[in-house]
Length: 308
View 1: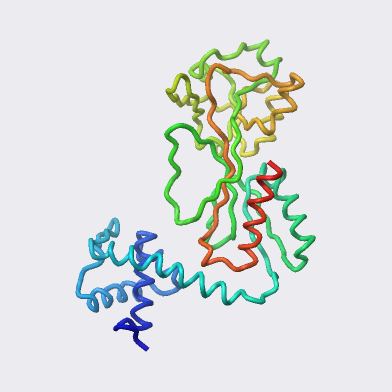
View 2: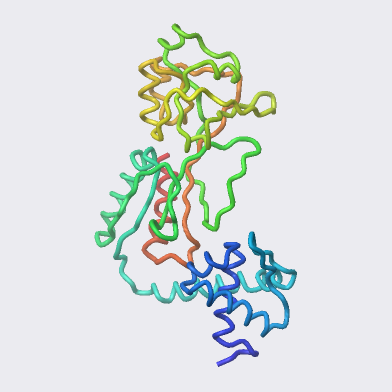
């Protein structure tokens, strides 16, 4: 039954239009929505004919939203989200938490936080299963996992790339440049970030977003392209190599406190302000998430901050 001239078929087309605007792609929106690309393109044409206005300007490179299309998107986006939230809430009423939660996490977070949190959760939710993938790299959130915990360095002026996913910060620590006393005695220590180019540097691409280490001095940030002596996407391995005198590491202070306290590692470039290290949780919007995942998400955020 149509409501004020808007029937179910037209609403389907509007929702597909919302996906096109979010993804910037007809084919990607069709994949997410579960229809063929040709059907999606036909829907947009029919929607424009029904409304009597052009909603999208098409080109081979990108999709551009018209003024009318932007207005339609802004008015319907929040309404559609609210409707889907209501449907998800009603469907989940009375359901027992049962099924598999798929999580991808950096090795550091998986070892230091996720193992304990998943174990605790299983005590009260014995019918929940976990599938945990340890990886420092991005994964396809729509296909492979329900949650992704990523680590990265942040600094003044840092901007994360745009994403359709929701991001929730979990923990933040200062990064510390450090080396062993043996390395310092043999090779000396850099007095400025630029001198790092002449030193052995231990490197994790995903940790700092590239082979550049960022430092701040008197309000000015400088990014130094370091000499990549060892590249490995595991902070604990980097720390182990630094402890044996293999080079200079740039790591979160949370995993260095014991070694800095007993002198097995020494902090360097202490006149400079280091970048910061973040754990962030990524997930789809709640309207696309079953109750089982929603409840675990809330528990994961709460316990990570308590443990950290």
